Length: 583
Image (cartoon, rainbow, N blue to C red; front, side, top):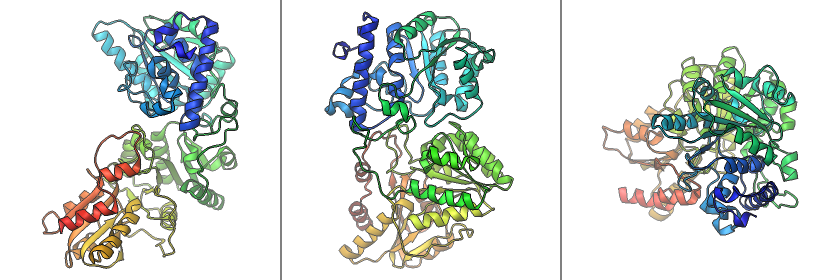
């Protein structure tokens, strides 16, 4: 059946039986791609019937679909001319894992972060109305995304508008892991009452409401969408679906299969070996030991508990000391500030790109109040996540320039845990620690247990003429450059581990002027507003030459780290060549 579908109009004449066959074909196509490339399996499998019904009833792109997070958009892509990206191995790289306007006129936004669809779609609707145009605007949002503040802001706005606006709430009783929060008690009550319980979150916002219990039944969905097509006021269509539908392992182990590595279809076994030591497991073991010894230590996560290794079993074991705020990072940071103010020892951990949502809370709620909470910044690196919506390379300019925040960059496992332990136990500063991303590198050297003398850099090797200040993940790159300068050019540079991202060791920088005329900075992040520019500014009035090495400020998508390093002249050979040229 899928062979006959090249655009949404091709499904409009199909019978219900044929649509069911199409759904089965689409699931096979999705599983085919996911088994070879990895990706968001559970969300996509659960939304097959819904997306078929949407395209059967509505007329995309005149009727506009906005998928929240858009990790459930694969059926939409298949039906809008991109099926080869799921059927043909050589075409896999032609499509992204999220909606992408560069791929199709049926996509309106690059979306990879959560809770945004209602707000984005409300903008489309407002522009439509101002231009006097027609057409339906449909926001598709999962239950897990409802805990995000922007989703509630969008509901609040649209609740008083008198215009066509349809919100499809995909409720599978599951976020990435289990849902948390009072909202989900009401969703459960609505499901259990077939949408009829008197307490209704959506009606409280002033929205009309329609419930579909059989959210994976194409005919039932078509009937519901036909009722709301061309409606003249906002309405929520609340559907009850099964996450991972059609692949037994994904249905049974929903969290594990939300996103998955490439796998053997028959067994579910991953085809990429990621066993061995890693910072996720090391961090979990450290925190669990710390939590057992001190009930004041509390870990906070935001929907991605496994980013620091808290699996379902561990969450149950440490239920009193693990808080999952859901998709609500802003709340997580503010809550950590309150906990720290009242004598607890909170550790809030999430991915670098998700910390972007918390800038105001870090600045206002945490740092103005100077409360000693710990922030663990994960995948903050060129070696982190590589989708355009999940880039982790913008954290240094964002976080290191907030007053009172001490931002630390460890270079290895031992230094990471020395910094983390100090951060949890100290009571003077809000502290962020950048979890290394360049592998679990060990060192047998001694690392200080006290970082309270802020902004004191560590000289690793004494040299002259050239000083290399190599930050965090790029410290080993700095070591390699120093070795190459010595072996190929007979130059012994000074090598420095700065440790602190958020401040300058002015005494050390002044002393470097005595026997050095070139300072090279290396940082695993964008240069603009970053660490190296602070060094360059310090030497602005001096003859000292400063060479900043880092990443260009740009959005990059589905890249290979080695390619980006070469393009930014960040191999040891390129950096050494540039140093010699500068000399």
